[in-house]
Length: 153
Figure (tube, rainbow, N blue to C red):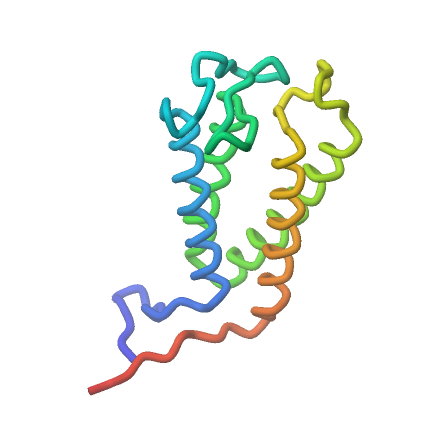
């Protein structure tokens, strides 16, 4: 095993890899939310609120604010992937945030001023799935860092 000049291992734990992949996916989703064609009804993309009727992949209601949140959440995932403990915080904390968004989406009428994110039924289900997967991975990867095996020739 080789170490960089800082003395830290070049290997990443499963939690770090998961945080990095989630971060990358959120960045891609955030960018795609600004691409006409991939985001349908693009002319109705507004800064926030339920009146933003743009739909990512024809399914998920988005707004400029929604896309910016995806980008920020993505960059946080990449940054927090630097250490095992930060990656676990990202996974578990992010999962909790998505659980709260799921509850928010259930409680807030979709065509009301309080739906400022905005969310629709498809968003709600995705938020629940993300919550379960992220918290689950954060817990499964445990407190002890487990690095991926690399073969030596």
